[in-house]
Image (tube, rainbow, N blue to C red; front, top):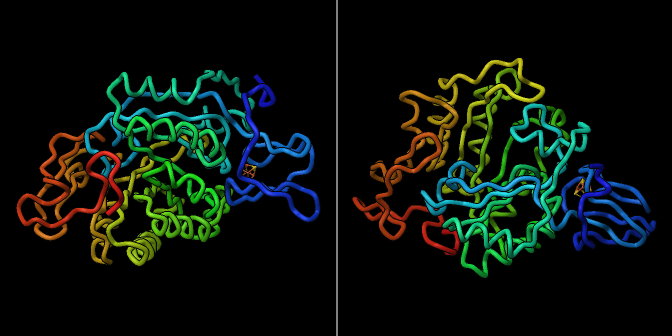
Length: 349
Ligand code: SF4
């Protein structure tokens, strides 16, 4: 099925420029589109005086623990409905969901499932979900659809999570904030040259993280460490310092690369570097640092510990919660408040 046959609706996140082109502000590429043109994401396109945007379908949806989206400080152990669409604003050569996000670029057949926001959310509620996550491809390129789904989710008192690549504008963050609780963002690199290989910019992602936190989103940051790409300890230490300056309570997840998509020939990332980087991040002021996609004794670095007395508060293994000792968001041993959204639809601490 070609892109032109994917369902769309009139968009909201754009404006008309003085030169007559329509500037899309759903992501930081800010494509300026003449009539009939499609943006870099491959899905938002101009038809006459309107921007048409993805709406009314999912490429995939699954029910699974919220932790599998690398979200640790939100409703631990809860089931989440996770959904995605087609297209992406970046082109990462190690994408975990390339069959969805890169399908249009790669000319792969697509098979969308038409659905309404309420039917999608009803399915999550029937399965016992406490949260809805927009993931798999970049949600912001379909922000209008995400907002419609999250509006239905909030009406059912479900928490809402955007899993984003961070190539995000302040306009899109403000547009989604009324119905979105969590901004789970990838921080994929620590130099502009590295980001250039992916099609984005480091400064944009750092700005998005700071803006999301300022707007009151609960923010968790993930850095996938890839051998030969961003596996430099000094660079990772620099990221830790930058994140601590924004908010030392933001969780930072250091995940190990596993070979996939165009970088199938690279080796998996060894755990040792991640453990060292995590220790450095604590030394630079971050309070919650996690190491993921690893096995063996390192799995203890998936637990949430009290930053004051170091007691284990949430025990995890392989992205699943085993035990929660938090009491009303506090350590039961020393009463320290732990930042996060531990109950339904509460505000970020
Ligand atoms: S969402 Fe798509 S059309 Fe809009 S600015 Fe980004 S790449 Fe361009």
